[in-house]
Image (cartoon, helix red, strand yellow):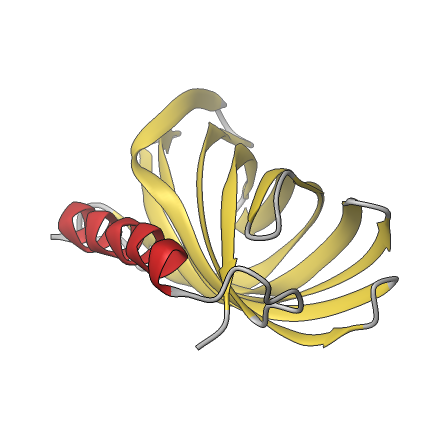
Length: 171
């Protein structure tokens, strides 16, 4: 089900691209999709590449003066890592990004809360997500990005290194 939802979001982004005004510059909304290398380090470590379903997020810019950026986002990350008898499946959450933009490149730090969903009858866990990233604009609507973030769950540190694209738009 989630895979079909992510496909619909991407189709919406492409259709919106052709139906919108091309001269808009200050976009408030964005969808992003990423693939990445995820891991869990603690009592027994495990790392792996996760592509399907991709990590997805919806972001809203709260402030952007072409130098400083403040945005919030809701996200889904496909973790898919097993370590020490635990199966870290995926996480959902909300975060705040604070960044600095130079020309077409932005660097940012992120902090938020995410609920880690685990397979089996294990208790899911909500905890702090933190990290940093970089975004490079390739056109008025499209950017490429890379991010490294962490989450401490039980006695493990979940690591997510991802790369992907961002599609910006206005409603």
